[in-house]
Length: 231
Image (cartoon, rainbow, N blue to C red; front, side, top):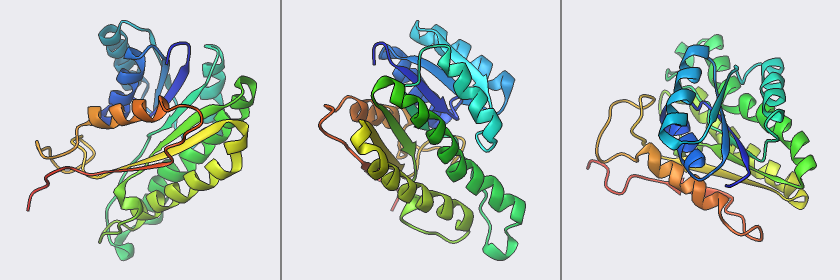
């Protein structure tokens, strides 16, 4: 990761924060993004102290094309990006009849459109570096539907398809794309914590493993499950 500039959306907490920490410890210059200015600034300061490497912050809503462009213009100032981690995500869980239009838009626009906007901005810049890497943090909800998950399932099913199409579009440009699909992860996003759940640091380790593969080899999809969930 030495000399690489990484962008992590949704990087102020949970999986995104763990990924940002791992990248910084591995030597990457990391820029984390989240919607709340104070939260992302504080997270960057804590990550910088923990890793001994400067971690930058930028407040942006990935659903907003103008804010995404401003984020990547900020990243340009550090000589990147080389790596994009699309991690920003929200979940609103209701039956379709009870799911409001704004709820639908919030989930799909964050989880899917946000990944598209950030990927498009990164891809434009990857050409300057002879390639790059996009890792989309999906979910097993992207292949397994569940009651109450219409918006979330739609966004994550879409993210899987988007990831595969982007890989096919840009693989000859030395752009590698991977979609990591965790099951239950022990974060504030999921309902409750438990020792049986995947740790955010485990997903961060998978990100590093994927990034460190030789350029001739692409891990395009990773499904991750808790080893021993409750019976």
